[in-house]
Length: 142
Image 1: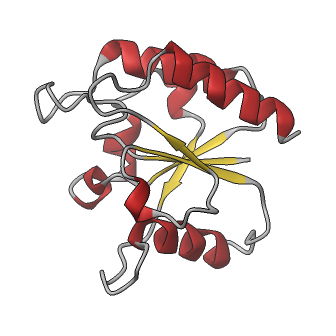
Image 2 (image 1 turned 45 degrees about the vertical axis):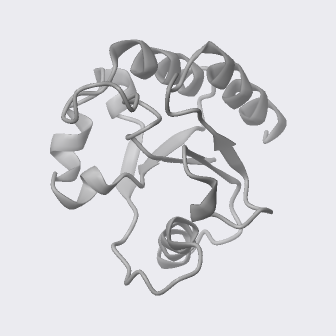
């Protein structure tokens, strides 16, 4: 199971400094991901364009960092749903197009309405309610 993760508005609230993730949001996300042994994380955040995968992993606690398996490709923005197109391109390139996935993002317009999306309020970030919703999805996806 792959979790496609955005940072801004999810792990960094809109009111927080631009270059730092919010510790409580990261912790809530970490606890939810680590609750399921098969969960793997792919970074969709635009931070992936400025930082290497190694540098992105260093933003997280070690156990969670070990679950980060990649980043989505940078595609031309001619797509109607650019973030979903990046997710689909990632899955296709790895030959796992039909695998279960969920996106965690604060911008629903990046995805088709039918996409598996956990929409996060950018004012509150990834809070305990979001963590429970992710744990529920992971449990059902087994």
